[in-house]
Length: 158
Image 1 (tube, rainbow, N blue to C red):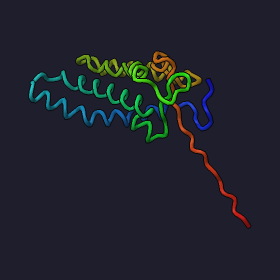
Image 2: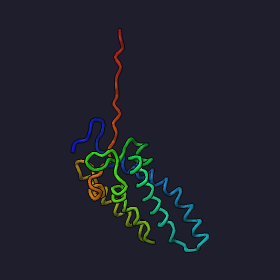
Image 3: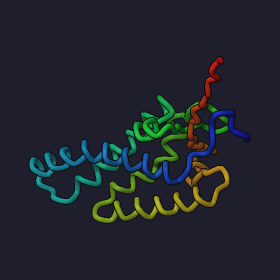
Image 4: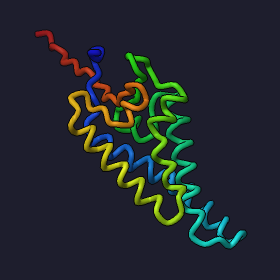
């Protein structure tokens, strides 16, 4: 399906940068929560992945399904479209495309699994002419797009 005028597939580099921005925002919230949980409960090492995985998943699903973008994507002029050109994915579609973030919940190994999933997703985005990753495919065909801002050049009257 062709994209409407003013949109192009979101490039891998911008998508990575948006994910990095979003990840930093999640960590800013997750780390203090994990530290507090470890202080009060005492189970050292179990909470960082739990909080980062659950918060990341919730963050991405909530923003994508309600707004069509995350803060990182919005800052970089991108958004997530649903399958068949829908303006945004449904909650289910966003949950499927972001389920890999929940791998972080697995104690001690989870963050490594998230990294491996990220590499696989990046490789599939890079090899796709529409820049859709395996996670977009699993979600029924979601697509991250870059919103092009038309530039108009005024003509001076003489």
